[in-house]
Length: 289
Image 1 (cartoon, rainbow, N blue to C red):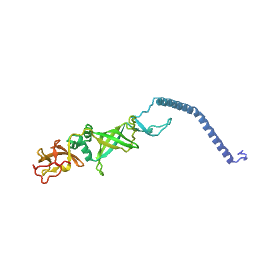
Image 2 (cartoon, rainbow, N blue to C red):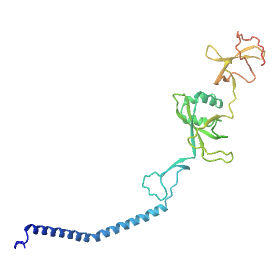
Image 3 (cartoon, rainbow, N blue to C red):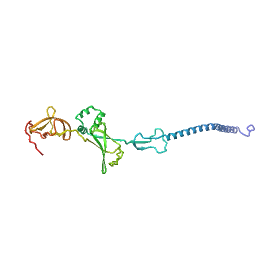
């Protein structure tokens, strides 16, 4: 038709391009048909592998039990039943309830006075040795009792506690020292005394006490005098009702009273007012109040 002139050369070229395009499409379809069996085999193998993995996962789930390493309560839950979780996902936040600790702030002078009343007079030497571990170990052997107290409406509840360690530093603003006390099983209710559980974050009062303080003589501070050599002494009324002077060794002081470690015996009569003039051997007349 081109030779006869009935069809132009451009029409022929367009028809040839259309033919080549159709041939290309046919070739692509034929290639796809040839690849289908291989792709099918690959997919079947992949599906078989996935089935095996599913069976292994089911067996693993049947043999998997998640146990907490301690007795506690769930504070935060991040997953639900049948939910998929990946490796490293946080499932739960559990709070240990086997024990709770409280950091109680005490003034060193008050604590030292309490410890000295239940310990030997070498308490200062124990402090100089240092070491929180040996210090707490020594104090734990003393007759020292500690307790938490929580005030509730219509109820005053207490829990026995124990001293476990020092906080490690002294508060620069208050000068107080932190003592860490611990109670066991704070969440366990006690039906015998109707004591409720105590939760973390509660404000409690810590009370220290001793049932068996050491035997010591306490006298008013005003009765103690200081000698020129730095020693302490007191005035006594001897058996003949005369003024006598006695050197004493002092212990801890609290408020207006001070402990005498050595120099006085029970039953001796102490002169509380300042004798003026203080003439040793001068006769005294006791005043009964």
